[in-house]
Image (cartoon, rainbow, N blue to C red; front, side):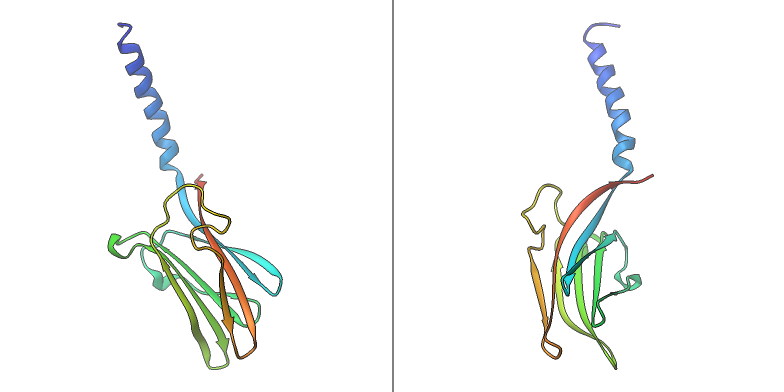
Length: 138
């Protein structure tokens, strides 16, 4: 083995070792939702269709739906819906759409910035901000 080919073999070996590590990394979106002084983190992983994603209750009045859609590419992105849970069913009061966030550090309040949603009937306020996270799959 020549001196010049040793670095090439080392490079191939490092590449082979890093590919499985990259393959097991998964992106998710974490939204930090505050209502009534309590903050909860709601997470979403890639889905191909938003229709199977359910809204989750936040307190007794708000519903929060987080969709992280990866495909098809022309509509890929993050969509966030906030509803109020009225006696006749959920009523949408806020919707936000974001392009797929790029990895890397963001400001204090992630890629969305701090968002506030007001509901005038009960004078309620919900705050949220979202960030992209990378997690290792097992």
